[in-house]
Image (cartoon, rainbow, N blue to C red; front, side, top):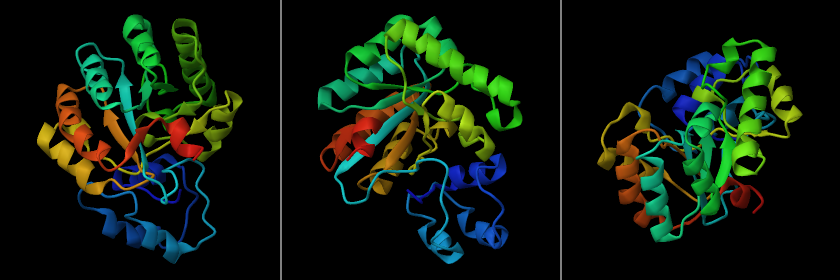
Length: 249
């Protein structure tokens, strides 16, 4: 679980997830291009020392054929439901990191995610940059999202992903107050940039390996279109599971 994509790594450094380590500045140069695989900075972390411990989960074990698809920022009518249809057709399961406000606005769609056997997770209530906020506001963001998901869907999320991957290391204690494990990702196709469905799908199929946590967003129609392309391909190579099933393996 010591693997990062470029975006996650840079967000982590900027958001204070890492304590300052000598050598980071000069070695960041090698992370300045393209969406990268989950193992893209293994060599960098090896150079910096094997004792590094990250305060969050990047991926599952490598010696597995399981892979976790995750979707952020929903539920979104017209997108989340399309993705659910696609996942159902291939028997795949995924984890949906939901924004509390969107759950409240789209309760039936949130319940459909639960009813179809997918995992619901916490992605804050209003999607702010939490690293810039006080502990009081951060606690409120997590608590309100936990409550709205529990009230509407009857489940208590176990996982939390900070918006933009931005979360100070000192804020980890707040997540633990709600028994939430902080999850980042190891494959980022940058679907949020809307590069086109084929590009998104190609990035996922070419970069994913066993144990990866793939970041997508059920906010953009392009992501739904990409899901239709990449799901049959990667489901032929991996078992697509929820984070809960990946991380207990």
